[in-house]
Length: 470
Image (spheres, one colour):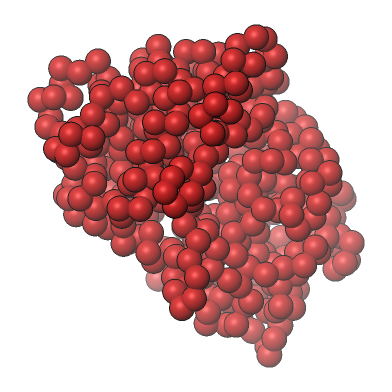
């Protein structure tokens, strides 16, 4: 490690990776340090594939931490429309955001992404789906998808990791950022702690924090401690739904990922589908505080008989409450308590009948859980009433678009939580109110997902070249 760097990037997720990548592509000779609490791609390994259940790895979960963040072990979908992926287009303009998406997509292709694009089918089926969505009061968002695939994404990000290393980017793995260093209102570096407990103060001209959803809670506390201007944003609480591929056959074929948005009665909160995985697998992810949350994966080659997707209910809080992330965590903790630390699963029909689901009922059902160690139970005992009603009403709306979606055997897993609610105030040059400090990606509250986080990294690289002499 050096005494001084030009740039320190905290978090090796898409936003941090593409910041460094864009600097190199533009000929920068800046000294760059990438600090990541997880492991490099080739050392990230989830033991569940061998033992059949989550073993709650320590100190970090291999699925959510490490080079590429959650991207390497997720379903690896790149949304190719500015209408999907967060509020960054509101900050920089929709046309500019779309041009950055197109540019960033070409970089992914250079490093091995599949050239095939899903969701661009224009046949008669799409008109019927759109008609049904309108009749149900839902908005169908058109969004081409480039599917990396869980196993293919790991190789792609390994290619990027090797490229950065060969170009001289220094990377510290298994190293956690404890805090930022300040000289008045200027950020001068970071304090890090190695896996063995040794601490170091590292200095830099500029610091980028890009810790992803996994680091949103940490960044929120950092903002409060150091007066980084921010505001509570939206928190998403929901479930992951799983049904047979036969039910989703048409929408999987013509859209691959059907992005539906609705405002069900009586509260008319925004409810949306997210992260649809045809032939995919439901997965468990663990956070630092032993919080188990549910997600979905989709492989290029390995397929299941089921499709899974998230249904997320957006919550916007007003004064005096200013801890939306903590609120969502409490919901997750209650659910984990009921499942003895595991993900809960319940049949939709049982929810309507006011009863819990029993393991023997799942064993003889048409829809078998792809998350084998999920615990059959009653998610309504932990889910807030408002969120639960919103989800039930939204499922009824989607059933009009996809007949059979609201079948009694449809499975609901809980908790599905998205931690990106803390929104850091920045200008169009991605400057915070502290000189030398920039906050990117999902943890900043401005993006949601791989592509838009990557785009924000590309923009950050350009701004560092333009305004800071990199």
